[in-house]
Image (cartoon, rainbow, N blue to C red; front, side, top):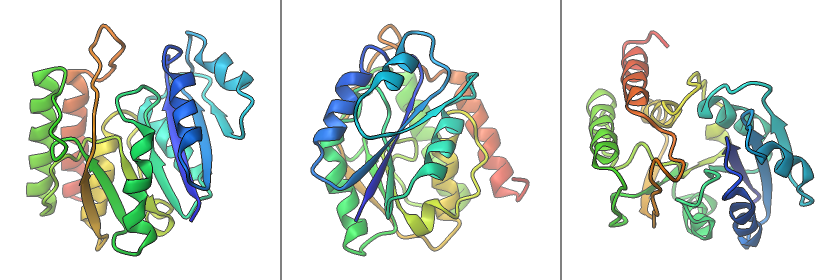
Length: 225
């Protein structure tokens, strides 16, 4: 099966070349989708000059990570799509293991869980916030997830093409999880390695993103979105 790797990027000039190199090395039939979210540090130019085979999408203004992911999924052509951040927190070498259950028909979506993978988050507040929102999703949508916030979400085409996604920021990670739980989608979680970076190194998520995620989940639960 062909795998579409959706790579949203905003000001990731320090890591994008190495990240794309690692994606290229993944031994799968794949489509690389690079979505630049109006970067100002040279990332846009790097994507433009990249000589590899890739679908390129450019935003004229910063619309948030969620908008980049949504545009990337709309451009996906593979039987499976997976989201891959442009930093190096998630190692693309893990992609084959994440898509394998979908290829074998054992799952419709696979989440790479940082909780199951015995990883340490860089900031306790981020870890606590992620756990709290995952618990909220499980209560509201009767789930049993351990890491709803993970970037690594692999989905079969029948799933990602039918998701009516609305989030424009980091809340989209939680929206995807919630919408999948509302369906009969078979979700499998697998442990992954995770190397978090600090705020000083470029981590972009902030506490306000947690409040936006809570609002998004409540709107979804009560049928307002």
